[in-house]
Image (cartoon, rainbow, N blue to C red; front, side, top):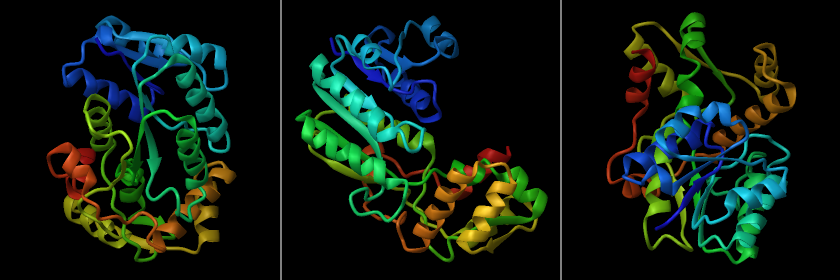
Length: 286
């Protein structure tokens, strides 16, 4: 019997990974969902999943949670500026627990990316290498939901805002990335591999706006801003200023090609094409 653990199991990506593992036939009793608040995972408990409480900031809780775990999906945390330390705590606990394999959700070309978001991912990749744990790096590209979640606002204002110029984005849905993570964590021959996971259909934000116009039958255009003006627009929309600066920096990176990849790794692992922007837009509007 193999025991699998998914961190951040009530988060957007982690939850989808749990669902994908169950869909692949992993028995609920062989699956551990690591959460901070078990109340948010009550339905998983009802399904028979082993819900364990653990906090990235609490090594003792991680030791308890990782006891008996064979294969670990380390979903990157969401607390920008704290993630390198948090991930190190999970890695250290995995070493102490004798975990056999770790898959980590990183970012496109983390070792060379100009994005501020990549700094902690690079540090985590280095920590995994130093740990001696057999592992795979899942370098996830941008989520299509980063754009489709904003469709109501985009349609209301007739505009998609950004600072990405004509940079191309190789995005896919969270479900695509979660399914790939589930395939790797349950598969063989992945240890030591680095996968640049990217959507098959790259697009510019101008092309995204045109696709949204076509599907929604409402005129939407892309409005390209300076990094400074885009940061201000995000702050005005309610995004905390430090994170707004990170998002605007990411758009600047997109302009430089930081989130464009053509490896084909994601569709190969999935055994199917990735979700297209048009499909994601239709699903969001439906």
